[in-house]
Image (tube, rainbow over all chains, first blue to last red; front, side, top):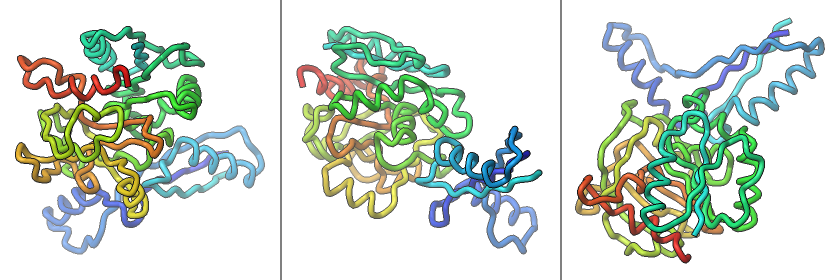
Length: 80
Length: 224
């Protein structure tokens, strides 16, 4: 089983990297870009067969290490 | 006075810190991160600067999983004094020993230069030898020094005199190099036994090398 974890800065926490990328895209003529957020994706291969159990474990990993919940939110997607 | 200095893979300021405290007459001991306890009789434990675990994932994030951090938490919970410098500050916020978090510098650059700081609170061991509003000159060297805390947390910090230092110019006017909330460079916990700052007082020990303003700060821990 595979878990895809996306970690982003919370809404309201300034994303300087996203802003810099937005600025660069606008400067290159991509005028329709309204907002850019930069996050990270963590892909975890797991020896699990139960989706609920896997998701619970990954959520625990996020709280313990993968995300800093003071400034970041996370989303978990489980793939069979 | 006995000072323990924690060393993770990637720590690189442990020997500067050791040199600084030795110059002040302290006995020092490097503590490898695999240790499961803080040796008896430590008067201060410093989480030194550097790039623990290469700053992978987030600065200080992987270091918080090391065995010695569990011991450090117990040590701090029992009133033991802890000082986190630069990456050490990041490790302490990641561990939850200090509130807030350190984000990527607003301008995205790594900043390495001397910077002025203003003393905001001195009713603590760390800055008791400094005056409130005193301006000191201390080197900074960081990529992730942008201190973040939400509005409620910030209010709490001020309410309990936990804001220690702010980035300023030489005259004491706010001069924020990295986007930190309220230009904050250093804080302590509510109990005032855990201290964290991004600037490096251990690198400001000799006037000949640019500044010895760090000396008075570190001396605060001696006989405190």
